[in-house]
Image (tube, rainbow, N blue to C red; front, side):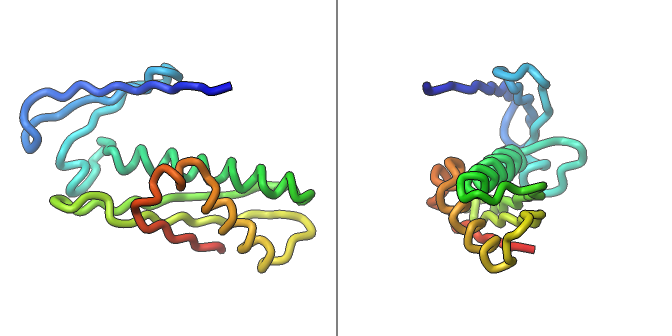
Length: 139
């Protein structure tokens, strides 16, 4: 069964001096401020599309990795993932870095790294973002 999730944004003013808000409509968990300075310089308590992509990617990757490990008979005790999304004004999103560490009883570090690469390749968000170089670091 397919699902659809929704978010919406309202922007006031021009790009450089304006600001907006993004609302997570499906979950209803909040509305968050967005601005060009938060995207192109320091966040200062304001989010950006890249931060939202990083949140989605780190979560999707953790879910895909957890599922792959469980299907292989080695369910994880815990996975810790993070994502960093680089944005270059005038160019766009230039790179994504995923980082993962975790505990998987009975799994060697080498097998953990292979399983993590497989999860990166098959994560639906990775698939959606494959136009951008995605690098994985396993700790």
